[in-house]
Length: 516
Image (cartoon, rainbow, N blue to C red; front, side):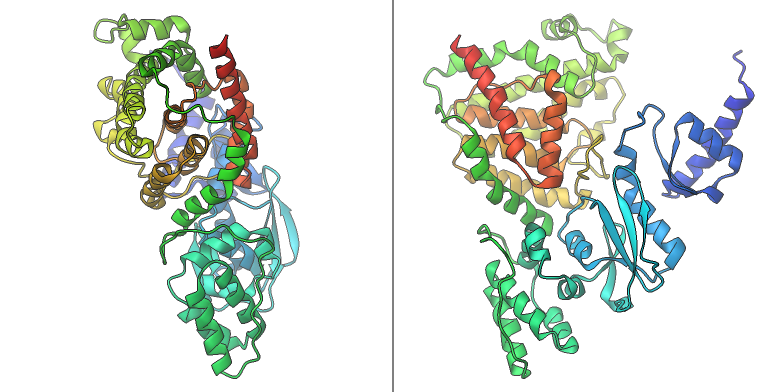
């Protein structure tokens, strides 16, 4: 019988206490939430990492020193618990960040400002280059003008819009357009403008609403303020013209964000790409060329996701030698299961491409087939009892985080609204390059599944490339860092340029190889 050391027994006991806290939904702990010995054992083993003195967050033992995943997963919980420990319920994030939260923006700013009457105007350095400023707020909003958004105390949208400076509309134009476009009506906003006598702010908000195409609300604000006897001048606070949106009034801000990103980014993508070849005349030759990329594609796509696969393993899977019923190693191997799933899913993707080459709308095909790709991708893991069959049913039901990315995917409730909007955009977009790049980007931005989003995103990209006659394009694992950085620049920074150029350069390599 194996014996355990005292340190192993201490760690085991500490893990029991730690699990009890996590079962309560607490992934951020103060020093006094655990005993000193328990805390030290968990830190040494890598299950806890310090944030600031006296505060710790859950982590994984296999994370490297520079890994930021745990921080972005725990940041909102830490900020909320830390602020409550100091200020009780007398705090909220700044007006700027409140609007961004209401807009569904999940990116943590470099410096988050907390408004609190007891603030000390001090800065606390956090992780990954972030900091916290506790601002002493003299004009603090009352309880009815605060609510909880994204796990943080925020000002209500109306209160935040009244308080943001004019510079907000230039620095965060996208977030401003999202919340203004998504508002159902202006009743509460106008009421607060009147109560506070905010005639200048009212003129700015009316101008902003009109710039967003919300003439109904702009006219309402102007009419009520003038009727109340206020001097009123309408001013557009946006610096640049805004992209036109075909948004539904009162639509989810997450859906509006998808539409707005697409409208803002599509021209940059199209400008980065070579001319569209058009659907191939010889469709069978095109499909044969797609099939010829399988080994290289599977190796690189699986390697990007961290699987340790070899060409020999991929060939065994493709040739049918892989036999989990007779070979326990095949049954238990995570890498082999991933390779088998990729092979099965790739066959379904090729069937989807055949439909697209036959003239069917690419967006409609992918809307119908992407769930099939997902089920095939993880079917072998279900067969091996590593996943439940119910895990293949529908989109994710939990929050997910992307390893070392500043972007935090939207909450699970938003996914079911965002995905139909994505497929609608794919269906109506006339340019294959925009369908490919933005389809891939917004799919992984949304992260609709618990796992496999990168692989399915690349399948989607290649199906859209096929709809324009572009070749199947392999993202090489040797360029993984560039690929992930370009995606994060688009997700957290709103700049699609690096990712569009990255895909175009990968595409150019495939086109040159085909020409040779």
